Image (cartoon, rainbow, N blue to C red; front, side, top):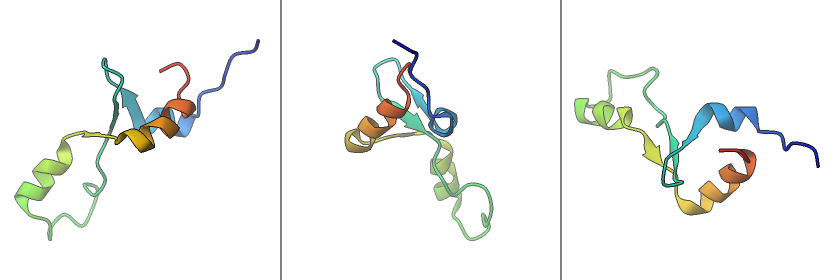
Length: 65
């Protein structure tokens, strides 16, 4: 059976933790930062954990993760 292909767009955006959860970088920290509060920008730095319903689709895109 041939190898399964990884969706490269998903591989660049998501990482799988040791426990199998999907991590992602939060959006909104690239530009237009002056109107955002210090607290908001600080919270955007932390990586987010994808909810399970969306994580199923990402796992299909990353067969070897």
